[in-house]
Image 1 (tube, rainbow, N blue to C red):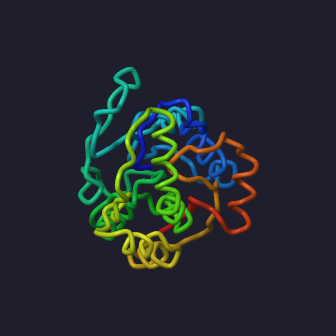
Image 2 (spheres, rainbow, N blue to C red; image 1 turned 60 degrees about the vertical axis):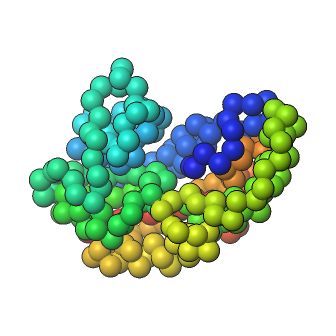
Length: 234
């Protein structure tokens, strides 16, 4: 998620990595048979979910548009732009991303590229933020400033009307882009088929409360999911 608040102070109670690993585990539990190598991971970041994937699949290509956070001990990472990828047609059985698609400027072109490099019997698994996440980001922003002031003595900042997480020009536009109807239109427009969806967890970007994974899962299932996973086939 976007870096909206300062990190690593004593009033940040949630472990961000735990959320990420749980999102992957939940997706894998539901759709494990669709995770096959060779697999392309888009937006590998610091390698957190790459290490999880390696527990199940040997042939993985990690990639990111920014490789600065990638640990050298994990091996080579591809520096690629998802809108024009240097792979042959049908190169991968699986394409996986977590909270990445909303950061791609031309996501329609990127999805067409993903379809091109995906095997005819392959699958994509994409995790994306929802409107719930965006509303929590906006609604709790000032609360986060007070929390930061208590934790670090920082002066309160003025409200920033454009707390943009992805590539939208405004928060209003971003709310529209985080709707399920938006993602269905993107996938269908690229000639892809949504096979299944899964609501994952409820959380904001501010780490106000401990992990409480079971509670976050329950809230997601009753309609307050901050992220949703899509299983896509050609």
